Image 1: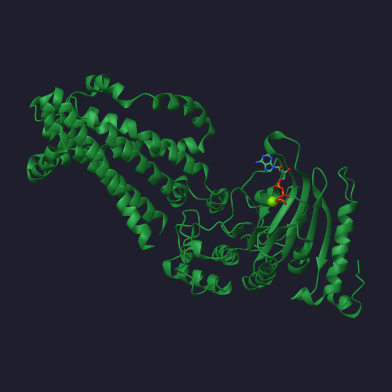
Image 2: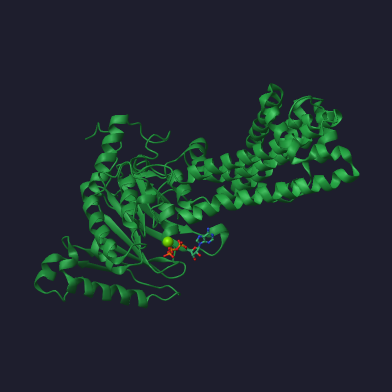
Length: 287
Length: 252
Ligand SMILES: Nc1ncnc2c1ncn2[C@@H]1O[C@H](COP(=O)(O)OP(=O)(O)OP(=O)(O)O)[C@@H](O)[C@H]1O
Ligand SMILES: [Mg+2]
C-alpha cells in the first residue's frame, strides 16, 4: 500500500464531481448557483428540470465545453480543463454529418489529434460493435439522409459508444422522437449503458423517462437553479412492469417540483425507491 | 410525360428560331440604309461560324479565354472562401468588412481596368485580377451564408473531440459548406464569362474579347457576328456544366 504512488483513475468520488458550480451567460444573472453532485461509476443519473432552467448549460459545463464562473469540475479525479477523451455527447438531434456514411459517422473523430491513438483494426471493431449494439449493423454504407429519426438517433448513440466513454452526456436525446420509438430508445439506452460499463448523465424534462432509465434522479429548479431534490430508483429493468411505483414517484416528483418557488429555500429530499418494497406493497415508498 | 418532354425541347427551339428570324429581319431592314450590315445577317453568321470552327485560330483564342476563366475562378476561390469563412465565423470581421464589401461589390470590375493595367502591367495579370474581382463576391457571400447555416451541434461535437482548428476546418466546416461554395462557383462562372470579353479587349493579344476587336479592325463583320454566337454558346455550355455539377453534388 505504501509504495503505491500512482493515482488511481477511479477514485471513490466517482467519474465526475461538480463542486459548487455557478454560471452566468456573459456576466448576466446566474443561471444556476452552487450546484454540487457527483456521478458514480457506471451509474445512470437523470437531471430533471423545467424548460430553460439551465440543464443544457450545466451539461455543457460538465462536458468541458464551457467554463464555470465559480466552482470546479473533476473528471476521474482530475480537474477538467478541456473535454475529456473518455466522455461522449448525444444531442436532441442526431446531428449526423450528411457527407459521411453511417460507419464513417460512427468513427468520426476517433483519429483526431487529441484522442487516444487506436489503429485501423481497432477502429473498425469499435464501429462494428457500436452499430451492432444499437441494432444498426448492416447499415454501414447508408447515407444519413436515408435514415428515419429513430435510426439516426441510434447511429448518434453508436457514435458516442465508439469512443468507449466512461461518461455519456445525453441532452434530451429522445425528445424529438415519436412515443413508440422513444420507448424503444429508452430501453436501448439502459441496455448499452450497462453493456459498455459507462456512467451516463441524462438531461430530460420527461419525468417518466427519468424514472424508467435512471438509477438516480436529480431535480433542478429555482432561480438561480439549484438541485432541489434527489431520488434513488432501485427498481430492476425493465421498469414498465411497475406502473404503480412509477405513478407514485411521478406524483412525488411533481409535488417536489411545485413546492419549489423562485425564492429558493428548499431542502433536498432524499428518497429511495427499493424493489423489495414495491414488489410487495406497490403504493409505499421508503425514505 | 412524353408530351411534356416534347414541350421542353420544342418550346426553347421555337424561341431560338423566332429570335433568329427577328435578327434576320433586323439586318434586312438595316441593310437598306447601311449596305455593310448585310454581313451581320444570320445567313452569313452561321456558315461563318462553321468555317471558324474548322480553323485552328478560333480554338486557340477560345482555349486562352477558358484558361483565363479557370485562373480567375481559382484566384476568386483562393480569396473568397477564406474571407467567406472569416465573415461567417467572426462577427467582428463581418461587421468590419460588411459595408466595405457591399461598397466594393457595387463597383463594376471594369472600372478598375486602367489602374489594373497601370499596376500589374500589360498582359494576363490585369485580366486575372478583373475576373477574380468580379467573381469573388458570389463565392464570398455564399461561403459566409454556408458557415452561418452550420449545425451548432457539429461544432459542439468537434469541440467535444478537442479538435484542432485545422481538424475542425477540414473535417467539419469545409465539407459542410462545400455545397454553398459550389453555388458560389456556379454564379461566379456566369459573372466571369460576362466580364471576360470586355476584360480581354485591353492589353492582351489573344482570347475571344481580343478576337472581337480584331474582326472589327479587319472589318470582318460576319466573323464578328459568328464570334458573338460562339461566346453565347460557350457561356451557355459553361452554365449548363456548372448546373450539372451542382446538381450531381446535391443528389449524391
Ligand atoms: N448563449 C446564451 N446566451 C445567453 N443566455 C443563454 C444562452 N443560452 C441559453 N441561455 C439562457 O440560459 C438559460 C438556461 O438555458 P438552457 O438551454 O441551459 O436551459 P434548459 O434547461 O436546457 O432548457 P430546455 O429544456 O429548453 O433545453 C435560459 O434562460 C436561456 O435563455
Ligand atoms: Mg436544453
